[in-house]
Figure 1 (spheres, rainbow, N blue to C red):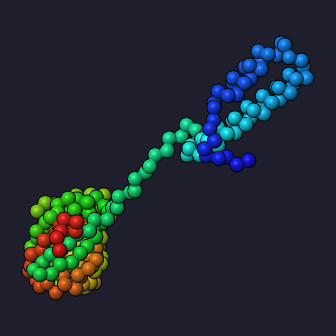
Figure 2: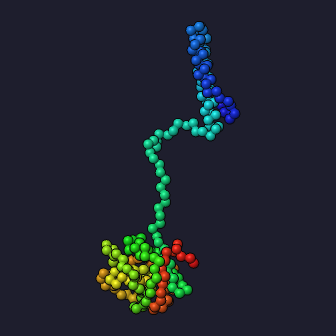
Length: 208
């Protein structure tokens, strides 16, 4: 049966009709009472169906609420923040970019930025310079064979270094702490010379 949206509904109709029928039950013969009772039930069903149609037409949900999630509080979980920290290394008219490690040492180095360092190249394999203060390297697995294109920290001398070549040299104990890796501009760092000054800062704080 279709449900016209404009069908008017009197929500008291069934209650009034049934109440009047009950009042007259003592004075009306039984066959007629049975027919009236059946008509009352049919009328109540019709009113209920039309009321449901009217609610649906008004945009209301008449379905019974689901008990599947009863008592469960649904919360929206915000997206996890990215753990990668990107930095830019500027020197002269050139620059390079790098990503810091998601480690205590990497985060401690990021907290020092922006940072201005004087780098030199004493061994022909890394540009290095002393930090203003040491980084806590306790509990970190040391690196004795540094990889090209990575950033390291030497706890023995509080030195920051960018390795651009591999001469097969073994780093003595206590080794190095990995801070991150160069993403772009490694060739520019390698060709920057033996002595130069760099400005290291967070990428999102840098205007290109």
